[in-house]
Length: 168
Image 1 (cartoon, rainbow, N blue to C red):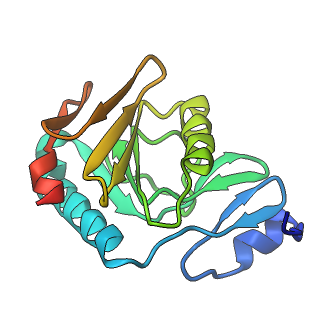
Image 2: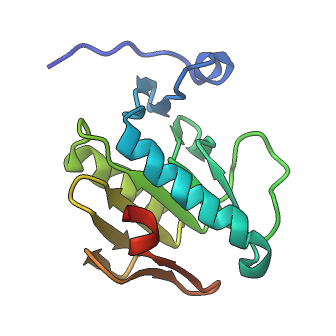
């Protein structure tokens, strides 16, 4: 098992990581990003939300820090807030939707911890997209659904994203 270095939250918040890292209980956690497949999925999803923000009544951003607790920060690949753009540098309230795109190095055990963190914080929907398998998993506090075709959906607000628009 690799040794980890603990740092204070103040140091995490004033350090510029590229790409941004997550922070959980004093430990800085790398995020797997950078592969073409990962980037293409992010680009398509963010483009979808940018095109439809006004009609959906949402605001979306890529790679924005979310403060889940005093020593707990996550950085979803994309997050969607119901309503207008929040006026804060680090989001402190639950977004409506968190989206994570798997990279080849990602492990589902680590992703499951992130999903659990998001849902416990009050996020309504979490989408995990796997570009290699061309599948998506939708998590809510009530349900888990795996899709390999069809449409990713949310309610209140209603969002519908065809998987073909993401993976093709």
